[in-house]
Each structure stands twice: as C-alpha cells, then as structure tokens.
Length: 407
Ligand code: HEM
Image (cartoon, rainbow, N blue to C red; front, side):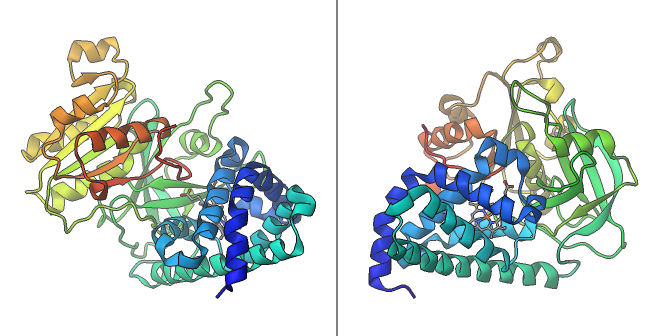
C-alpha cells in the first residue's frame, strides 16, 4: 500500500504528466525500443507510427494513477486492457522494463522538476498499478490454458478455407494443426494472429474478431484489406493475409480474448450496429442469437460505403428470411448504380439519431456497436438521444480503445 504522502504527490503530479504526456510517451517508446528491441515483436508498428498506442498506454497509466487510492474502481478498464495484453503474450517480466523506461522518460522530459521524491512516488505507484495488471492477467492465462481446448501462447492453425466476402473483406476458416479440440469463446471476442513478414524480419500481431458463432470445429476471422489511403500506408498484415496466404498455410493464434461479449442471459430485444468491418463481431453475435435464442427480437443495422464493400449480405438476408424475429437495415453512405437499381439498402447517408429512432424497436433494448472510430462517438450519442440507457450500450473500438467523448 502507498502512504498518504506518496498518494498526495501522485495526485498533484498527474496533471503535469498529462500535460507533457505526448512528449513523455514518445521518449518512453524511444528508450524502450532502444534498450529492448525484442519488444518490437509484440508492439504494433503501425499504431506506433500513428501515435495511437502512445496515447492509449499513457492515458491508462494516468487514469490509474489518478485513482491510485481506489484502484478497484477501475478494474473493468484494467480487465479490458488485460484481455489485450493476455492475447498478445505480455508477461509479468515485461512490467519492470516498461516501468524503468517510463520513469527514465519522465526524468528526461521534466528535467529538474522531476525530483527524487517525485520519481520515487511514481516508481511506487507504477509498482502498485503493475501488480494489479499482473494479477488479473495471470488469472486470464490460467483460464485460457485451463479450459477445454485451451492453450498458452500461440498455436498453429491451418487455413482450411478462404472465402471472399466483399471487394475488401475475406474470411479465413482456421482449424488447429494438431487436430485437437479448440477452446469455446463468447460471441464478440477476438483472437490475435501472429505473422512474420519477410520484409522486416519482425513478428507482427493483430487482433481479429471471431466472425462465426462458437461451437464450430473451426475459428473464422474476416479480415479487411487495408489499402493505402493518402498518407496512411497499406496495412502490412491484412495485405499479406489477403494476398500472400493460401488455403493449407499455417497461422499462429493465441486463445480467444476480449470483454466485448453478448450477454446471453438477457432476453430483451437486441440491436447490433456495425459499420464496415465492424460487422465481424456482430455476425458472430447474430449467428449465436438465431441459433440459441430464436425468440429474441434482433435488429441488425449495418452501414457500408456501398454494396460492393458490404460483406456477408446474402448470409444475413438468408437469416432474416428464415427468422421472423430478425429485422435488418442497411445504410449506404454512397450507393452505387447497382445498389440503386437493386434498391437493397434502407437509407442513403449515415446513421443518426432521427433514423435510429425509427428502426430501434424499443429503448429497452441491449445495443452492441462497432463502427469506424470517427463514428463511434456519433453513434453513441445518437443512441443516448434515442433514450437507450448507458448501461445498455456496449461497444468495441477498432484498434486501440479511445474516448467516446465528442471533440
Ligand atoms: C496495449 C496500458 C503495460 C504491451 C495497451 C493499451 C493500453 C495499455 C491502454 C491499449 C488497449 C486496447 O487497445 O484496447 C498499459 C498499462 C501498462 C501496460 C497501463 C502498465 C501498467 C504493458 C507492458 C507491455 C505492454 C508491460 C509489454 C511490454 C502492450 C502492447 C499493446 C498494449 C503490445 C498493444 C499495442 C498495439 O497493438 O498497438 N496497453 N500497458 N503493455 N500494451 Fe500495454
């Protein structure tokens, strides 16, 4: 436990560190990767370049520090991060490395303002925060390894089938190379895929939501090929998966993880809202709902640029025909000529509160959403404007978690 004086120092310095947060974390990563280049096999290089991961880690450390005397209050956030860490293979021995480099970065950036007393207080606070993460993650490792079909680390899976779902999304059906059982999962969870790319020699790890219902002899992931847009380079891993892997090739997977999961005890209407490749966890939830809760009303809302990038449409339409409790609504930002001719979408433009009010069956619904990052805050506030309670809103970000506050 930290003493009162240490807690007071931490609380009074959090705002200063937040203020200089970008500089500190930039310096932290420089120090971390120069002293421990092996960590470049774990961290996402693209997120590093875009500064996304810097912001995520820094914000989490400051949020934890601000709650240093009431850490149980932030356990849900710790668990969400811990799921990601567990799926990446972050281990207890990594924490002191991160801690030492974070302190060194604070010292470098704050200079004389970082007194020995302040540095010691942050070292103590980091130790307390790290031990909470280590404990939560250890129980997740034990659980992943201990469950039927579970495993530790990365396990070899063979690509049994590759199926093109749209111009940009392809599904991969993955079966374990050892032909032993595979762990169950909750709809909404993801797996990490570890690949080695020939051009840089590093292993790269990416998370992909499982896109089919649990209980199958395979895992299915559905990957969007991230093409270069403007100054943003093409996604190395997604491009390699689309273009360089074939049926019969092997991918390494860690066991399913994630806390964005369908509550299967809830019997109220459920609304699933996705945009683009955000539909992957939603299709897993949808398939599970029609299989296991055939009387539960489901509204499936999907937005896409147009019909050519709208994945799994035939599948969802087939389900809607077979299940009267399922209603589907498609929203195209810019329908193409074929879409206009076929008239197979319900709205042109984007999801907003006025439209949602007309399609959500009841405000007493459970809502799950996963849309591209710029639309997350918009959809969240539109749902609130429709009268959906905060406790009924469940969401997942693409990539590192961020804030839902509107800028
Ligand atoms: C991701 C916080 C320690 C490696 C994250 C995220 C946060 C975070 C908030 C983003 C989660 C998300 O995307 O949903 C923290 C905190 C730590 C800590 C507060 C210390 C108390 C570590 C350690 C390692 C590590 C010790 C291993 C060296 C990673 C990696 C990612 C990650 C590789 C994913 C990065 C990416 O894909 O861009 N962490 N972390 N973290 N963390 Fe940590």
